[in-house]
Amino acid sequence: MDYFKAMKEIKQQALAPIYLLIGPETYLAENVVNAIRKKATSYTEEENVIRYDLEETAIQEAIMDVETYPFFGETKIVVASNPVFLTAKADKSGVTHQLDNLLQYAMNPVDYSVLVLIAPYEKLDERKKLTKALKKNATVIECDPVRDWDMDKWMDHLAKQLHIGIEKAAYDVILQEVGSNLMLMEKELEKLAIYVGEGGTVTVDTAEMLLAHQSANTSGLKLVDAVIAKNLAKALRIYQDLARMNEDEIALVALLASQFRTINHVKTLKKTGYSQKQMAQQLKVHPYVIKMAMTRENYFSREQLEGILNQCAITDAQVKQGRMDKRLAFELLLYQIIRPTAS
Image (cartoon, rainbow, N blue to C red):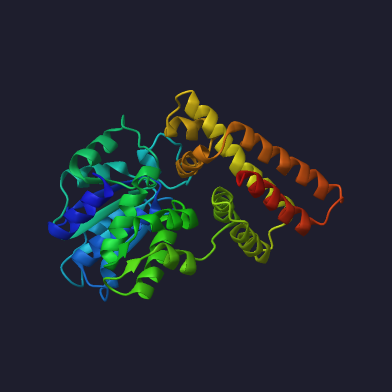
């Protein structure tokens, strides 16, 4: 079951006795746990939420706790993380797990507790009897990293929760800043929601004004956008932001070259019929990077891209050899890259 469907079921239906959360996206897993906790017990009843790390504690101890009637409220929630025994990996924790206890519990769970197993792994060992039993008897929820093409859907979900709207043009601004970091996206959207107020709409200007500059890489994407827009003044402002982040000019030249090299690779692979997924695998970069490169490659010919990369190489050599002041060299590079696009 995917995350959105699971969250809807938790809110609308009775809780299942066992949940198995599979996937490395811990942010999603914690959201599921919080939703279960809100449904089952109030936040003042922390005694009814017990956590175990199965790399430190045996599963039989967690099962014993699940089977013990709650002292406060009506429902106890036991969260057990890192069940490496469900995978094909060797368990190096040194903990002795009596897996039959979990197998028997999966067949006959109590009705006054909820067991949440968090397996932060890409896949489980489907050959194991225990894995099969849990998949059959538990509610299985996928907690995989959000795919690039689902980011708009995820932003819609958060905006709905925050009771705000987001202009479609502002989506790219937000994604450039936070990438696929869901926790960071939630925090930034919360900040935007406070600014626009309930029922308000986040515009491009609002997003650009309020979003924190998270990394040199996101600013590198903005530099490319400034080149596309033939906006030297904006490119210089972005450079000044990067300089305030103590980014060295040599690193910035390499950053800019990297962005245009990716665009050049994408242009080549697109001609040969590669899909976005295949490009990401071939270039070993995040699918979001490929998506952004595909929106940019149309603005450049192969000759322009090769010229930009050549100019980056010349600037890199000038700075490293001490033939030009680093700040002047980078500003001149921006001028040389943007000026030809205006012709």
